[in-house]
Structure formats: C-alpha cells, structure tokens
Image 1 (tube, rainbow, N blue to C red):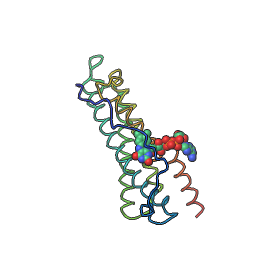
Image 2 (image 1 turned 30 degrees about the horizontal axis):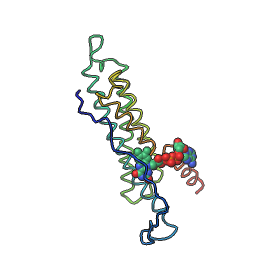
Image 3 (image 1 turned 120 degrees about the horizontal axis):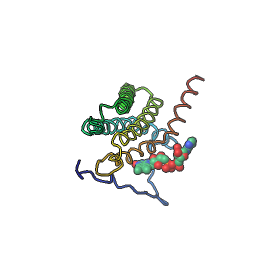
Image 4 (image 1 turned 60 degrees about the horizontal axis):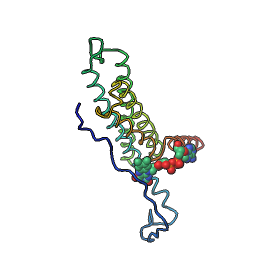
Length: 187
Ligand SMILES: Cc1cc2nc3c(=O)[nH]c(=O)nc-3n(C[C@H](O)[C@H](O)[C@H](O)COP(=O)(O)OP(=O)(O)OC[C@H]3O[C@@H](n4cnc5c(N)ncnc54)[C@H](O)[C@@H]3O)c2cc1C
C-alpha cells in the first residue's frame, strides 16, 4: 500500500460560547420548556445515523483486513489460511452483521413513527463498541503493519475511538436503555 492515506481526519477544536444572547425566535422547539425534549428527539435520529456510520466504517476496516490477510504470507501460506486469523475475521463479520440488522430495525421503526429511544441507544452503543473491536482486530491481523501509518489501519483505529464518545457516550446509552427498561416494566 502507498502513502495515499492522510494521517488525520477532520480538524477538531473546542467551540466556546460566552455570554451569547440567543433571540427568542431561535428557541429550540419554539416553546419554553420544550427544548430538551426536542433536542432528545434529534439525538435519537442522530444515534441511528451514527450507528450506520459505524457499520460502514467497520465494513471498510474489515474489507482492508481481509484483503491484507489474503495477500500477506507467513510460514509459506497466506495468513488468511490460519484459523486463528479466520476467527478474528469471523467475529468481526458476525458483530458487523448484528449491528447492521439493529440499524435497519431501528430505522424502520422510526420511519413508522414509533418511539425508538431504547432502540436508538442500543444501536449506537452496540455499533460503536463493535466498530472499536473490529478496528482492534484489524490492527492485530495486520500485525506490525497495523501499527504503521502507511497501511491506514492505525488511523481508523484512532478515528473510531470517537464513536464511543460523541452523540452520547456508551455510559449515557446504558443509562437511557436501563431507565427506559425500568420505566416500561413499571407501566
Ligand atoms: C471530535 C469530537 C466531535 C464532537 N462533536 C460534537 C458536536 O458536533 N456537537 C456536540 O454537541 N458535541 C460534540 N462533541 C462533544 C461530545 O458529544 C462530548 O464530548 C461527549 O458527549 C462526552 O461529553 P464530555 O466530553 O463532556 O464528557 P463528560 O460528560 O465529562 O464524560 C466523561 C466520562 O464520564 C462519564 N459520565 C458522564 N456523565 C455520566 C453519568 N451521568 N453516569 C455515568 N457516567 C457518566 C462519561 O461516559 C465519560 O466516560 C464532540 C466531541 C468530540 C471529541
């Protein structure tokens, strides 16, 4: 592989708002007291969207790892022939498929107008954690090359760490899922 890989993704910085006056016309939700609820609804869609992004990125990482495993020879054979390497590929494939199914199910329910607070959080949590595991296994499959920027996987490994943080951390998704479960059980 050549050095066609950029070493950094999007530029990232803090944005600080100090003593900012926001016109009443720009009130989120249009009604005082409704802003948080409205923002949460936007987050539900955002979480399904982010889960879909995780599925896409994980697929790209797995494709790269599989291609490398087929090309790379050790002990006279492609490392893709080693069952322990196949196990890492298989675990990634199965988890990726599960996340994809979750995204499709949650998106379909949302399109039907159903409340998807729990599903959106499940999707976001599982897909972002899955993506981290797929990236970690890809580094392992590439061995030392997985650690070198020339091969691109190390950048994915760094970049996908973000998915477990924004749009609500994994802990926040756990809180939402758990709280919804208890609320629904109580009726
Ligand atoms: C690259 C990047 C891009 C971003 N883009 C955006 C953006 O476009 N728009 C935007 O609004 N934000 C954005 N964010 C902010 C992002 O959403 C927050 O960083 C994220 O929600 C975590 O909040 P925090 O950083 O304040 O961490 P904290 O809230 O301080 O959390 C720190 C730790 O404490 C845990 N924690 C916090 N509260 C609880 C709790 N109640 N119970 C248990 N554990 C808890 C968290 O899970 C985490 O492990 C971005 C962040 C990054 C890094």
